[in-house]
Amino acid sequence: MLIAHFADTHLGFKLYGLSWTMDEILDHFRTAIENAAAEHVDAVLFSGDTFDYWKPPNRVIKFFMDTLKPLIDRGVRVYAVLGEHDTPKRRDLPVHELVPGIMLLGTRPDRFRDCFTVDGVEYCVAGVSNLRLSYGEGMRRKLKERINKALAGTAGRKTILMLHQNISNFFTFEPGLDLGEIPRSPIYVAMGHLHRRIIHRRDGQVIAYPGSLDILNVDEVDVYREVGKGFYLVDLSGDEPLVEKVDTPVLALDKVSCELKELETGVRRKISGFPRDRNSILVVELTLNADEKPKADIIISKLRKTLPKNLYLRIKPVYRDLHIDYKTATTDTEQLEIDVIAERLGGEKYRGLAEKIKRLKELALEEDWAAVREQLEEIAYDPYWEKHIHLKPITLPEVRVDHERVAGSKAAPEKTGFSKARNLLSFLGGEH
Image (cartoon, rainbow, N blue to C red):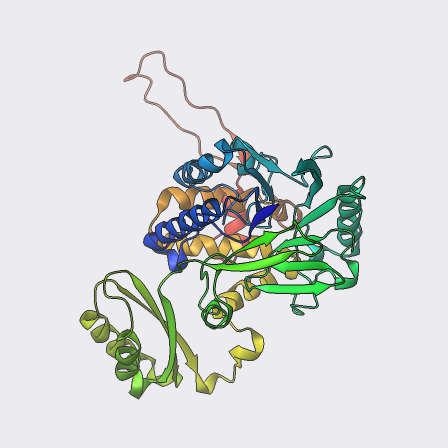
């Protein structure tokens, strides 16, 4: 049996709010699926965060359905578990439930596993969707219970376990499972969540992260250079899984670090190796003093005007004299921003809401006002606000009508209601 193992494809994601990055990520996904189909795989696994947002654009959903349809029509089994990004934030169906032919595991009592026979050998695919272990030991116990439930009845069969969780042995800066907590009965543990490729073997078992399919953050550039991006082909026909890396195209993204005096030469030297026939992004980590910022703004503005139109230049200032060690705090200033918002909200357990607030800023910068409204709705209806903001009744102004001009009309009655927006704005430090 041959499977294709994907994770963290984040369909619908826009890097730095650029629409063309979403289109390229979709194209790279299509290429990867075509590569898997060419290998005549028996099953395709999506180990969480298939979508970047639990309510992706309709065209992204249609693209996903259309891309997988040829595989599904050929009888290829397609399985998925949810990650933290594509788990509905309020009571609703996951997007995967809308796609015919996909079995979503780990979300309902009757959907923890699927068993079948290929070439006379019995196989089971078991899966548990993401649970946030940062919420405490109770969530850890619940995750272990669900894993045990998913694996119940799989003895004597070659079993694949799908999870979207951190394993703390590989990434120590986030709560996660220990390797000792991963059951030994599955022959292959198809992980998702970490964006770098990891293959860990123990006693005939393989625990594997295929990593994100594309470069989704500037900090993944070094990882890409080291181990590449793509998915895994896994042959389960033998006593031990055979895992082959399949590389796929990625966004044209690179980075450079320089002082202000070296900015122009550093940028031009780096972009000389960029493809001329496609869009690309260069992130500049610019070291300067705080009083140099006005001068830097002028230099950057002039530089942008001389660069190719298909090059997006993003500046990440690093100030010498602010006594802030960004690299100690985090390797990514965007993640630092999320950290700060989460701290303002009350701690790490509110990181999901902090990510939504950060996303709101990106959508506003892109001027995608329809998406801004949707994101505001997501934020306003998050259960966090009910616990932290006292919603007071407000009195709406009475509307008076000129009865002599409008015969038979009546003055609007006084109305009361709750203003989530007003209280939310007050909590965040805006106007009252």
